Length: 248
Length: 310
Image (tube, rainbow over all chains, first blue to last red; front, side, top):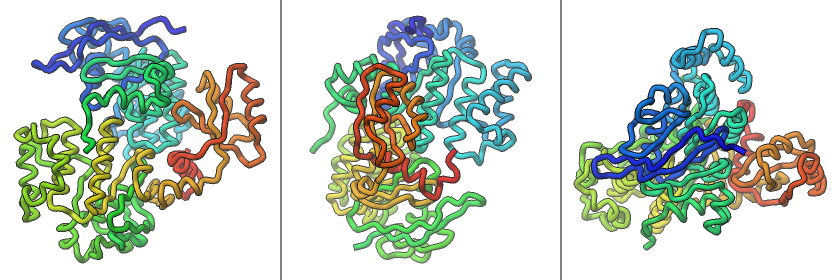
């Protein structure tokens, strides 16, 4: 159904000195796909994400994002992707409207287009009433939804979400996933990291990194079948718990 | 025997009511969880109990000492691991540990037995600056530093936030071992599944207590009709189920949809025939027992905080 890759990665390597952070990564992500990028802390996810976002050059290997090369077209990549992290999302001293104008401006949208997109995205969230409020006082769940809207204000090919639901209440977390589904159905590819294993089930395909390598990549259903377990939590534990832990 | 007592504690920061009439009691040696999302008031409560913040109103004691009048006594007997990494980044692992031991007028050697299991994993890095450790190692060092004076009560503020599922599990193993040392442990977390690892839990949201009980007690009090639905295209199934007249709510839950129905009268056959309006594919449907997360969501909808949920 989805056959056009928007991210193509082949034998990608990133070394820091003698430390291999990314070891021969090879994978594709398709248009409109929800792709879960999982791994233990320190497995190399952040490094790979930074390369794919055009923030870091790889040591060797090939990768293109939205058709642009990660070595030579980093600025093109930045223009064609959206990015949202848990830690920083909105300028707190700016109003919601100002945040939209700011992000829209950065991505070179016209004033008219910014207004259109602001209306469209806020309308979808039913949050038009907060347009002139500073984002500082808004509930975390609203902030995360607004941040997500800002990350796709310029209709990027791909949006990278780095632990977007950390610390968010369980209902808002699910509303956030509704937004992810809608976005993907609209043709924007969603590349998402999470520590909530139930959220791994919501992805169409999931990759699991262990010690710099991609150890597994498949649909949640196939992964569960391959590892003979009933949940993604168990798949993750089987793969990521490589060293015997202290069980004394 | 009571270790921590909180009676009608409120705390406000300007407009923001961080804690509203919180009352709870933690027994000696208990592993007590404070479960709630960001903004629930978990950190404010911990800062009051560790005497870093005065309650706005109400009363709280730790091991019988009042948090307002007897803060000196409390500080000697509690260990506190804040949510944000707060050790000295440019001191080594060993130096941090010695430093914390010395402020509490003790030595690492005196209490080594308590931290031994955790510290062995840090030993290879003992000359490394704390700032250069990995996330998991930082967390373990912070725990060692909070334990080195053998506290009676240990406060752990979101020790597993942002931590992967494997390290989370390891951390809870450590807590279970510490419990055997008769230390009272209060631990906060936004991960609902961690509730099951506690003796008792308080569920919190926006400064309110939603419920306090054993994990099983909370589950037993859940009285909605709860179903799990599994099918082929889960998202379209979810959207469809939200239009079901008999549905109270429908949410994704891992590989299933959890559907709550309005009353006892809704039957499996009614749900199935509604689903079959849009799909011929195989559907798995059955009544299930609630998880803590179902309970939390149920309480969010009916609790005091309901007014502010979109």
